[in-house]
Image 1 (tube, helix red, strand yellow):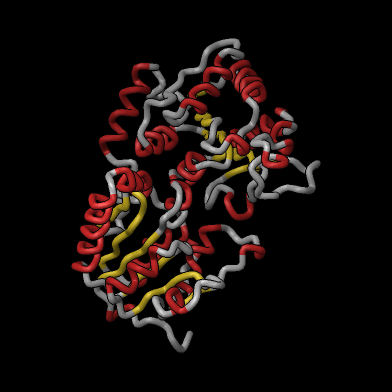
Image 2 (spheres, rainbow, N blue to C red):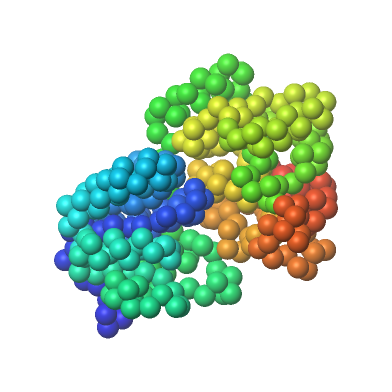
Amino acid sequence: MLKDSIPLNTLHRALVIKLRHHGDVLLSSPVFSVLKTHAPQLEIDALVYADTAEMLTQHPAISAVHVIDRRWKKLGLLAHIAAEWALFQVLRSRRYDLIIHLTDHPRGAWISRLCGARWAVARRVGGRGAWWNRAFTHFFSSPREARRHSVELNLDALRRIGVYPAQAERRLCLVAGAEADARVNSLLQALDLDTRPFIHIHPASRWHFKCWPAAAMATLINQLHDAGHRVILSAAPDAAEMSMIDAIQSQLKQAAPSFAGQLSLKELAALTARARLFVGVDSAPMHIAAAMGTPTVALFGPSGDKEWGPWAVAHRVVASHSHPCRPCGIDGCGGSKVSDCLTTLPVEHVHRAVQELLAQ
């Protein structure tokens, strides 16, 4: 036991801050579960960006989800300041005993100081100086070169204060909710797929350099159709992602039902929870599939599967073994937004991974 462990039984309220993208926020969900398990009396709040809030709303361990809306910056200086101040007032009124800041965003130090929590935990960040160092009572170290999964890196914040999660406590948690379940069920009924197995494929990512070519994905879907499998496509309501769906559909021997641009994040979770299998790239929908317990085939290129792979679910990671440079973390070869390690990934490798999981 650490000499400076925090006495959890004396705490009343805690705030966990995760200001990142959708997948990052979802991968922080075990922090709330573990903290609640070890301190059942604790009210635990979350602070995230508004567009990522659905990753945590209805989480059984979370009392309230507070948000920062990045659109505040477009309101004008005075309105922006008013919105920020209103948020700080709400956070101060909660009188947190503990703040856990899971990123290196400078805002965490401001919140820690303004809220006056007795204990505050953050990642150790070099070069931040006294303002950062004096804003927190405990620092955790998670060297990126150690190639540990992001879930474990988040949980290091709890280990630093004397909370050691059991393996069974580390699962992702995402609640789709009754409303999302009902809408997805209605959509599937219209396709006569509410009682029939299907494979869910989400081929796109907001980051093009993480995507497998549309032609390759179309070939895979044609092979699945030939084998008698039903496939449902999805994509975010983004012009590039919708264009990729169109490119895939144009190369299919028979069109696949598509919910591209039609689903909220909760509805996407409800859909993939009903699927027999999920196929996608390194993206938030892949993490959503893992959270819903759906067997997952994940295609990886420049990003690291050890850090970002499907967590705690039956899965296969398909990545190139002929490119020793991966994972490089670069946005395409030479910054071109196109990754050779993905464009050359053979369809048969992905198809084999799908067959292996379907056989289980």
